[in-house]
Every structure is written in C-alpha cells, then in structure tokens.
Image (cartoon, rainbow, N blue to C red; front, side, top):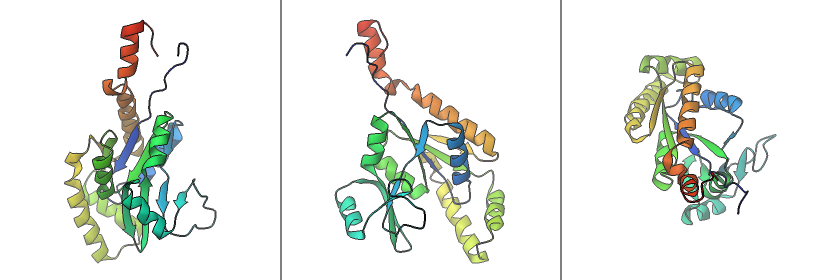
Length: 211
C-alpha cells in the first residue's frame, strides 16, 4: 500500500566460540551500545530460579513438551546439560525477525552449527581468543577448574577452533571494545547486503520510490 513502508526483516546474528573466549562479555557490551538488538530467549526443562520470568529469561517447559518440540522440528538447536534440556525455539526467533528485530544468539560451536544447518540465512561469527595461552589464563582466572578439567577445555577449544572455517566472520577478542565495534560493523554491513534488500530495489526500479 502506498505510503506504508515495508519493514526489512531482522538479522539473526549467532556469536560462538570456545568456552572462556568472552562470548558473554562481548554480547553484553554489544547489547549496551546497540539498543535495537535483543537476546534470543531459550527454552529449558530446568525449574525457574528465584527472580526468573517466563518468556524473559527462559521459556520453561516439561521434558515431555521439550521432546515434542524436538520431534516437531520446532528448535533451531538443542542440547542436554547435566540432565536438563536447553534449546532455541524456531518460532520466537522467526516472529522477532519478521517484526524487523535483530536477534543475538550466544552459543557454543556445536549448537551454532546446528543452527546453521536449519537457518543458513543467519550471520555466524566465530569469536577467537588471541592465543591458547591467553585462553588458558582466562580459564585459570575463573578459579573453578581442576588441572584435568583445564586440559580438557583446552583440547576442546583446539577442536572448536578447527570449526571456525564454517562461519561467516572471524573476530579476535583481544580487546572488548574493538571486538564489539567489529561485530557492530558486521551487522551494519549485513543490513546492506543485497539479498536482504531485493524488495526495496525492485520497488524503486518499478515505481521510482523506495519502500
């Protein structure tokens, strides 16, 4: 209809990388400087903790309900962690994107590649540590890992870094401010990608106005 602009669909941005790379810190910083972004809300079978709100922190479901979501292909990705299931509901992400909202999904590499297989039009960013030595120092700083657990984490990190070639972009998290700025630039560039703007280009070509 003339005079009503067609809203461009939002972008699903998946930020992934090894544990202790700083995914959470970078995402929080990104959210603080880009008010149009919002986190994807996961679904889980664990019980709500004090202060957690349905639909804000998580979608809380029974295991039977979660299993049905898996069977009906309603999840972009899912995993079992310490007896509880966690996943990303396809419908809530799709609805947000259709409203023109940009969504950030912070996830481990295994989950990210699940999402890519089901939603390849997403933007996949691998957050890389500056070095394995620095990654080891960050894990040690947490003070929650035994020497054996640290070795396992570093071995897992090496394997996960090998999967970085399957992503669209690589950002080295040596400096939070720089990494955040680079991710902002990636999102800005993706908003200008021709495949996301075909409707506007066709409308300008046919009617002489941008919609």
